[in-house]
Length: 273
Ligand code: SAH
Picture 1 (tube, rainbow, N blue to C red):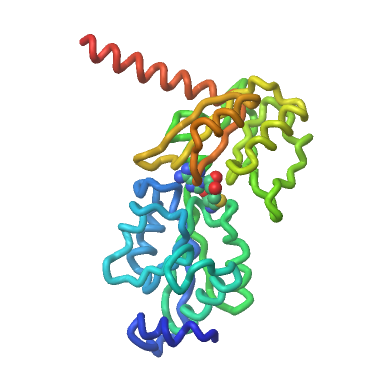
Picture 2 (cartoon, rainbow, N blue to C red; picture 1 turned 120 degrees about the vertical axis):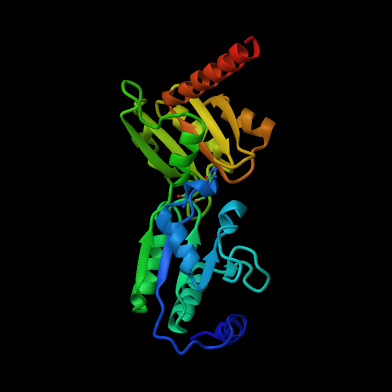
């Protein structure tokens, strides 16, 4: 057991003398609290402790009952910059002290969320760990701006790709992304967007392939920037989108324009009675 637990025990009101607790790795979705699953909500309501990430929206955090201890392992003073290993140890400590723990992660725990590593760490410590899936950013953001990720005659498959490699620069087999009928969704792609644009153009994607950058998707202040592969670096430099943002590349992005145009048309019709 680590040295953090005495302090935590104080926060929690002492040791429970309960049998070992369990951990639920719960997906919080992309931001809109309505996109939580019923199971996620129920687990949040039943938890003794919730350990959450910086990606989890305020709106979702507001669903945690007032009396439940919620620990922000992204930025709470004292927990600042916790390493993955330490987060796993914290979950283990809490479960061993008899608490039922919800580990709340943005989107889906198993899509670029390092949920797999936490699950392995818990399993190695013989802690029961259950997974509650969440709506991943690609699916939530695409829905929120009317871009179908697959579409007959336009996109027969979709790839979820991390735009951030282990050492920063993305490690991607670019030649595997040249098929124009494949929609590409880049997570964590902002920093290396110029590299993405250049590599995709060099590896057979047309320079005028439409691209959408969705900032804070599904949240009240969501912003969508429409560009092309060649123009992407300039669009990003000009509008300065901030994390969290997702980059969708492929012909399906043209349907956003269609959806928007239809919306504007409807508004115009309504305005003109
Ligand atoms: N497990 C998460 C992804 C974690 S990686 C999931 O399944 O969604 C973090 C990246 O996810 C961010 O850098 C961003 O690219 C993307 N992301 C998460 N939430 C987002 C949101 N609301 N809007 C846009 N992108 C989002």
